[in-house]
Structures are given as structure tokens and as C-alpha cells.
Image 1 (cartoon, helix red, strand yellow):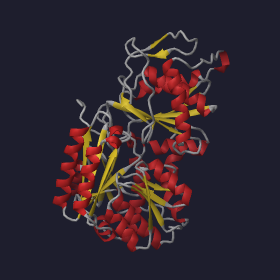
Image 2 (cartoon, one colour; image 1 turned 90 degrees about the vertical axis):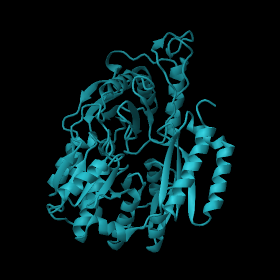
Image 3 (spheres, helix red, strand yellow; image 1 turned 90 degrees about the horizontal axis):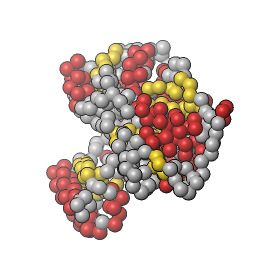
Image 4 (spheres, rainbow, N blue to C red; image 1 turned 60 degrees about the vertical axis):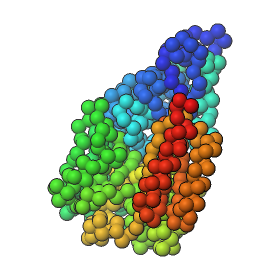
Length: 484
């Protein structure tokens, strides 16, 4: 992502004012990554830039009203104000839905047939922020529409876009929604019945003791109430957001605290959400982490047994463990491989009519219940599975899938997209693949949300996986170092 640092100055072209860093030449256009636009708030993602994004999005979306929500980051109100100003300046009314999970906003978008914008950087540290855009169907925008917004934004940034002067009642309004989460809470509390098409017990999670790690994030607005309404005894962790502690040593990216609490309290299991609650990691009663692949294996088997898996296939990403593929194959369930990102999972599910899909990172999608990954919904379905089977999560996980040892190394680089042309890196990858033969695999990919290259190695021998991953990480570091 480019790094604008200044404000707007006049343009001699007669078009819109250019956004310039420190009075220098106009910055280069920003791009949508795997999950929207992200950057350091007020440095990379400045209010000036975000206002321009709002104006560009309103122009391309051509809608009367846009929903705008945010997570708990300190920079959220600042950037929400800037985005809303940009949207209203182009004539769109803005409905402020406040702090809520990203999947709640997606549900509201679909329910009210309105596009939506979420101010969140998901699992990133609090200094970062971002913008995720949803269409009136509650789904993330198509590549084509994102490209149109990028083009319009680029023209605005460079000062070559003709300003459309709206005055008087042509200017959009900004309104605060009243109890925007009421409908979403009802949706979550009725999801088990909608999934199976059968009536459920009034309190289907009664008898379960669950630890919820809310990551000091958006899940704080709804998760505890919903799980208690469904009958569970809930112990909440990381439930006091202060604007700076979101994702800090807690949540899906660091579930160690959740694991310790589960063991200490003797809970049945724990659920650790990320900052905007679109994904979740589970923890069994022994403190062992249960990732998205293992949840997918359990869900697929359970849905198959209940005749809820219509197409006998599950959409997964290239990062999914080989053990998941082996487990699904053993059940006669096909795997549909897609690029990383729950938007790609959803697209594949829609194209083929699949009922289940997800990522190792904990984005799980139930197509009949959601238009995007939903950590809270996933946690409810997982809790229901444990309750119905009268078995521990540990036992259910062990019988569903045996994972291949996997090592993942994130290598910080200046330009992740330079990976494709790094010949020495790919020569090292080819050598590693020959070394592993048919007993493992190697995957390198440029992150779409962070300035890193992800190096993943699977092997039957965990030591070999670790050694090869570290060796490849050193090659990536050497070839793509910032000083080069």
C-alpha cells in the first residue's frame, strides 16, 4: 500500500484536488488486498485518503444509503468520520451502525439490500486499520467492482477526476442506527434451526461451560449475550476494549490465554475470536488448539451424517493441511481448492452450490447461514456439535482428522509482490519439493493483508518441515530484503 502523509492541494487541471505527501508529487493509487484496504492509521491510511475512498466508493456503488460500521480500534471513529464524509459528499446517505462484528455488518447489508463499509484491520495490531466493502447482497465486492473503485480513487488521488459539486439537499445525510444488532442476535440464536431445518431445544447449549476470548474487539458487542441466551455457561476473557488492546496477546492470533483459562476453569472448551469476529480458533479441554481445518473436518462429517452436505464437496484454500484432504477423501467428500481469503471460498461455494467451506485460519462459511466468515456463528455450530454428540471436543477432533506436521514462517519484506519474479527463491522451492517427494509439500505466497511472504512446509517428519521452512525463509529474506 502507498504511504500518503499530507493533505489536499489545488490542482491546475481543473479536476479534483490531488492528495499529495508533504507537498510532493501525488501518491500512487492504493489497491485492494485479500481483505480490503489496510495500512497504518493516520500514516498510510490518512483521513484525507479515506475520504477519497468514500467518494470513490459512493460514485461506483451508486446507492442511496450505505451502512458503515467499525471495530474497537482507537482510530475507528476518526476514519469512520472521514469515510462517511466522503460518502455523503457524493450524495449517499450514511447509516452509522457503530461497533459490531464484520459478519454482522454483512448480514445487515444482505437483510436491508444496502452496501456496507467496515472500518477494521481484522487480526492486525491496533495501529493498523482498514476498509472492507460489501455489496447489497452482503458479499465482498467483485474483482471488477474493486478495480473500478481503484481506478476512480487513482484519478482522485492524482487530481484528474472532475469534481461533482453537490449542494443543498443533494448532499447525503449521516444517521445513527437504533439497536442495529437486534436482528443479527436473533439470526445467530436461530441459526441451528435454520441449518438443519428442524426445531431445536430452547437452550441447545445447556450444560456446556465455554470460555470466550473476545480479543478486546467487536465480538464484545454480542457474543457473550448470544451464548448465554443459548444456554451455555460463559466465562469471558479480553472483554474490555480500550482502543489500543484489540488483538494484543489474546484472541485468534494468540489463543494461549484462552487455552490456559479453559484448563484452569475445567471448561468444556474455548473460542478465541479475532478483532472483527469473522474468524475463530477453538481450544479443547486439554488446552490444545483446534484450527479451521480441524473444524472443517468435524463439520463436514457431521453434515454428511445429517444429510446436510448436498454436493459432497467442501471449498478450502491452498493453505489447508494435507490431513484435511485425506480425512475428507476418506468420507468420499471432494475438495475444491481456492486462493487464500474467505471471499474466494464464498465465490467457489456460490459457483458450485457448496454448503461448507473455510480456511485453516478459522474463517468458516456455512453458505445457507452467512455470506462471509463468521466466528460467532461458527462457534455456535461447533458448540452444538459437541452437545449433540455428548463427546469432548478433543475426542471429536482426534477422530475427525490427523494433521500433517506443518511449519509456517512469515517473512517480513518490503514488496511481497516481488516474490513472483524472485528466481533464486523458486529454485530453492523446487529443491525442497524434490527433497520431500510425495511425503510433503511446499507453499509460498505473498500476503494480501500484510507486508510479508508466507512460507509453509508440510512433511511427515515435523523436524524436516521446520528445517525446510526455515531454510526457505532465509532465502526469501536474502532475496527480497528491503536494502536490495
